[in-house]
Image (cartoon, rainbow, N blue to C red; front, side, top):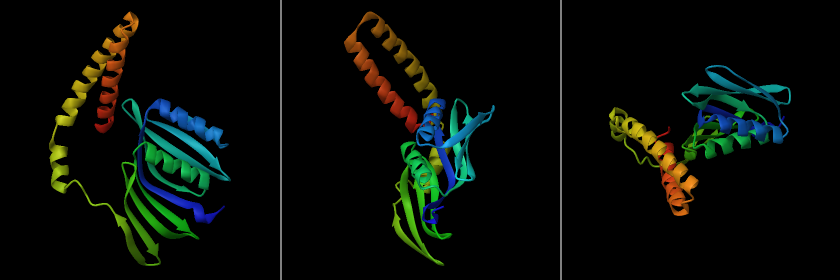
Length: 199
């Protein structure tokens, strides 16, 4: 086991739908990992064998989506790169600790798939290498949590998407190519807004 690639992912939070989890399983199998999975009403667990160890990835069911949560210690370089790609692609959150000979070398705070703080550790010394300046104040956050606008907009957005899908269906059936293209563009914009609202 190469200890230079020992990485701990703490407070991991990534969001997926069922199809994305199936794609993740397919990717791991293609990478040559031995794995199995099981599903209950509340969670989906994917167990990945790395050497003699078994890493259990836990996905909690939240409505019709899944949230990967927990802390994971990964000693497999390829699997560590795969998890980091997941964090980046899903715009997830995590605290990543990189070890060498069981000593922490670096700590990365990641929010929305982006490093916001990078700390180098040398024994008891901590040195901040990089820190992204906050663009949102604590007051802004408090106001955002108090506001119901995102929840209200989410309800309206679902209705708009349903209507736009009906428009697209009718345009496809009737062969109205211009309407099909403009409808697809509107749906792309709505999808982006859904992702921003974290639906």
